[in-house]
Image (cartoon, rainbow, N blue to C red; front, side, top):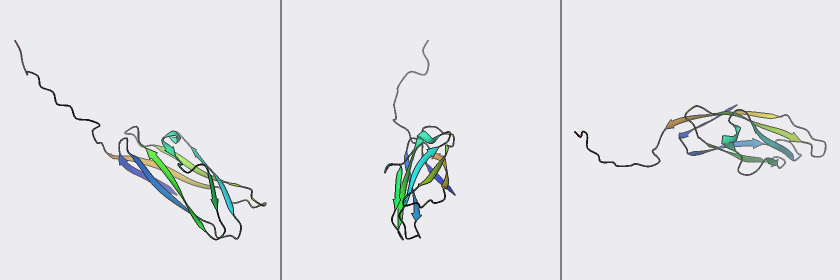
Length: 116
């Protein structure tokens, strides 16, 4: 699965990942961001994700663009053993695209065009 982050340069974009637990046991995952641009992505609620039995939870993933080039990283959700229950590792591809650039500031300057 690929999660795409599109926005302005230097803007923070938040995407949500919904995880469901269809089992009768609590699931616990350790979330890790890896890859070339992993430092530009963050998990504001922390790296541990707990999903109650027969419930779902939302993970917020934030991205702040620093460069015009597309950023790439991977979100890995690795299960922790709770009561002997292990789950599959979930992997999400994170990609960004800068759609527009907003000026940080506007400066007005006056000067003569030509002087002898």
